[in-house]
Amino acid sequence: MKLSKKGEYALRALIELGIAQEVGRELVQVTELAGSKQIPIKFLEQIMVDLRGAGWVESRRGKFGGYRLRVPARSLPIGQIVRAIEGPLAPIGCVSQSAYEPCSCPDEDHCGLRMLMMDVRNAIAGILDRYTLADVVEVTLRKMRRDGLPLPYADSHVAPRPVAVPVSAARRRSAAAPASPIFPARLAPVEGLIKDLFEDYTI
Amino acid sequence: MKLSKKGEYALRALIELGIAQEVGRELVQVTELAGSKQIPIKFLEQIMVDLRGAGWVESRRGKFGGYRLRVPARSLPIGQIVRAIEGPLAPIGCVSQSAYEPCSCPDEDHCGLRMLMMDVRNAIAGILDRYTLADVVEVTLRKMRRDGLPLPYADSHVAPRPVAVPVSAARRRSAAAPASPIFPARLAPVEGLIKDLFEDYTI
DNA sequence: TCATACCCTACCGAAATAATCAACTATCCA
DNA sequence: TGGATAGTTGATTATTTCGGTAGGGTATGA
Image (cartoon, rainbow over all chains, first blue to last red; front, side, top):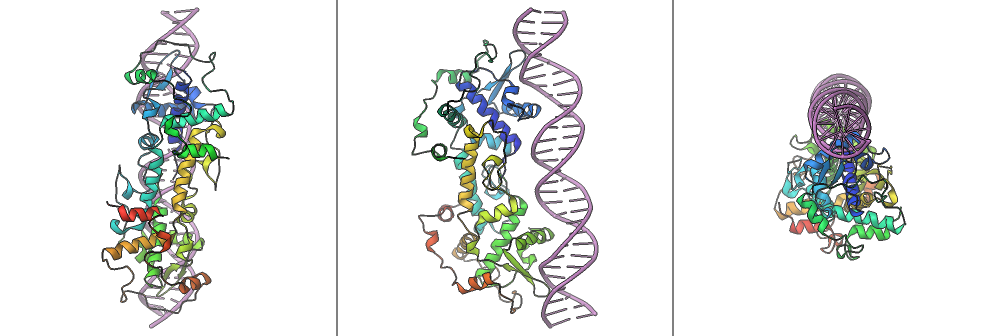
């Protein structure tokens, strides 16, 4: 039940772009997204092709170029990303809701393994479809602020030169929304496993 | 997040052996476990090596030979099987509790993706560690009985010849326990996703 | 002895994964 | 205009894993 490197890097890139957006950074270069050589740059470039193809990211070429989110982070469920990059969430094909295929079920109607795997699929989907990119960005930033860490991309002398960039329609709506409050109603303590993890999680 | 064919076949074989045990069938041949050629026999033989190596299955060679469960089905959580056959349940290495390895986290303490994947890992483990082989066997049999299907391995003229087989200690305890009642307290309606699925599940 | 059925080892091909390589193209500024 | 920067594109590579299959050995009972 592994997330592929491609999936991992795609999610990281999107989270980084979400963070950049939150702190007011307009464009982020692929070298920045790759971090300290932990993600191979050329591989990430290819992944960015897919992210752009999916319509979640847009880019600007040339000097002072880079990438940014094209859709509001809050409108992008993680499950949608994972499905697009990795394929169906279902551990076996007979429980897939997006790409059904028969497996070695002796008889689907009475197959206990199918039922169990449906449970697993639904649990995975329950989490990944519940949380959006914005949620993950928020928790990341929240923990950084809690520990007093400098926020990435907020360092003004490292930022690419501000430019008048053509604004897509999706981007315009995002800019119109105020920054999320730190404790939005969506992540009230009665909801959200990530919230629970944030409260209780220790390494 | 796929279950491999090997994992799928291993689980199916164990479920079949559990069913056989419930209906009183002593030994099951690999051809029976493989079903109508849906599982490749030679591949399944190899998988049975691993299941025997794990101590869950024992076998008898020669004429009237076959396999049977060596441990009580109720003592075998599905998560244990999946881990042994497939490896860690964690989608990425930094959230694995059995096989931790660093990934491309910029900083584990503040990595929102790590937190999310911990959620996913825990959800998967929550299900797979909660239910045992006996639960899956039970739900399978329950649905078959509900629909009036003939139970596999219960056909007496197809059964291998009854033999006095040396009884392992684990097997002796299993034989001493009465057959599970159809509605055990463990699967009361207030618990158990599988129970929920059984009640609500439609294709 | 022969038939049956597990046991063991090795091999194979395909596919996917995880990159890397090479070159092109757009943008800006001096 | 030229050079630097940075995205874009397409192809290639290497490796590993997966999902089997092949071939033969060994134990058991009639």
